[in-house]
Length: 308
Image 1: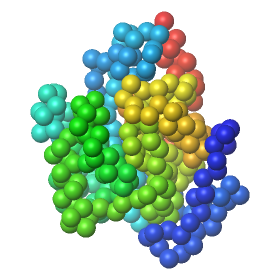
Image 2: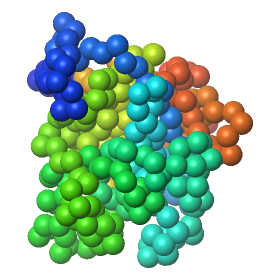
Image 3: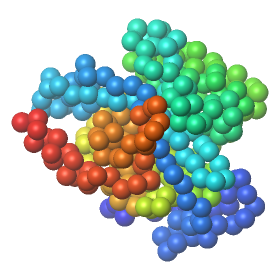
């Protein structure tokens, strides 16, 4: 357990079931259900520098890269999508070259957006909720604080508003009015072996997803840690509204995951290198429920060595 970070009590009655779940010795939920977890890469950019990834970096102009992911959690009982990526219309509003359509990639993986019942939204930034319309029947899990922030007075500031697209925010409000949004106020268990945990820093009301897999508890960090080096070395992202909360969040990620190698970041290209790719699928999909090819410490050491 991280020093100075209070234990999180994960043992509570599930919202989706009347069954009480047992807890282990650390107060964490136990469950017989495990899941496969997949990262779907829908885009990448090489016109990037370390200044865009790490605040006050020693080599700010050094070349870097970024990849864009959303995630699928599934077992025999349920399939859950985490975030949606962004579509061509969103790319046009942000003056960006469009990536392959994330909904098409999801369909190539065998999941039809229109049939998905549950979508977890880690936060309302455009690259995470930029393809909502195809999910015509899903209910969306969202932190209440995220919606309050995205529709609140701080949105008058360009710096804070940039990543919130008014179209996407309006689309989510429409779903609220259609009773298709399930709000959470902090930590919540949404299914056996799946829980949500609020971590501020990158924005207000971001939530990470903790999932029980065959290799242990995996945490989808989203942008609570966009890069491995951020949480591994306690580096602050330039995309931040509360640096202290972001740093405390790295401790919380360690507390929630079985190890550092069970923390999956939001944009690090190392994800596609460390985890095995699903074969015979016309989409870049990676198996996060399987062990990485090497530890993250070895991976970032090799990456730093190659950059010298």
